[in-house]
Length: 188
Image (cartoon, rainbow, N blue to C red; front, side):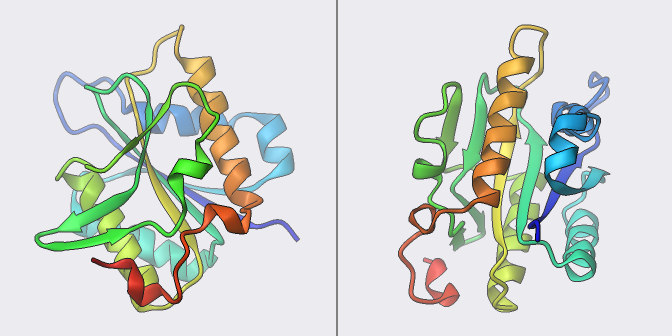
């Protein structure tokens, strides 16, 4: 049986933005017959740029779908590469993803790791989901990926990298998980 994957993206939040690159990327992945014929993907696109509303919608979808994997995506206009976030913060509380992101992206060109999810709605959503998974003791693996502005020249590599990350998470090797005894140890 295929693993269930939930992918999320946001709408725009500033007047100059014609679209959100994270949503544009997921739209293209959703329209890819090759990807959709091999993966069981559910898309929750164009989330509102509001931490509580976005978190409520994603958590409701988690309860309904019971995904094995969650890949949240957001736009980072100032970044040049696809960036996987290692953790999320809310005030002094820090929660790390239990996916070993260094191993996950080790040989992918044009993908970086970030330890700062941006202190905005992206980090708020990521924190809310990781906190929910931890407190509910769900075994769902979750990462947050920031997508740079998409261009004709960078799009093919970014789409290939995100697709590869999804496939790797689908076939999650135990080495891609942090060495953790239980989920309560994931906070610092």
